Amino acid sequence: MFVGTSLTAGLGLDPDSAFTTLIQQRIDSLGLNYDVVNAGVSGETSAGTLRRIDWLMRQPVNVLVLETGANDGLRALDVDSLRANLQAIIDRVRAARPAARIVLVGMEAPPNLGARYTAAFRAVYAITAKRNRLAFVPFLLTGVAGIDSLNQSDGIHPNSRGERIVEENVWRVLGPLVTGSRSALPASAKRAAAAGGGRSNIEERSGQRTALGNLGLD
Image (tube, rainbow, N blue to C red; front, top):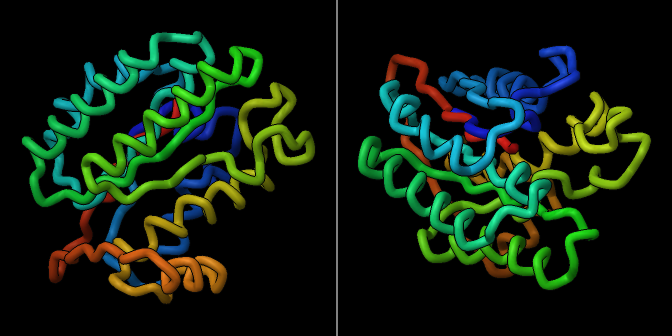
């Protein structure tokens, strides 16, 4: 399940171009028994994600990809509130679905908010991931943000070309969880993992398809 914002929802895109759909296609091509559930909501802040997470956890979830906070940054909301909301979401997911693996997706605040705010905003994600021992995507839009040719006219949401890069960013971390193998990684990521990172495994349910919970970006 992917829980997140318009970045997860695929705002402005043909549904077949959204990175969550591309991830489903990759999963299917590998013969894996997982269904991607896109639970992205446009305009949502981390507080909004917290308000609906209990409802989302009523369905079975094997892996939750949590992307939230981008709208907090756009509105220059308090970083301590973001930190508290992320922790509360994680706690509720673990209480409701203790076996679910969580992937936290990092976001960046606009640079015009100043170096102090943007650094504090960025650090919230890394610290939260480390504290909770989560798989971590440092920044959803690595290689896409700020590049006109990879974004829609608003300069915020990726176009179909950008979505392919976003899918790679997420799969680099998600892939080993759903395959149980580094074979899901690009060669560069395999080298990085060999140099210093462990990997997490996730157990499939035999004979049935399981849901990948999408936690999307604001």
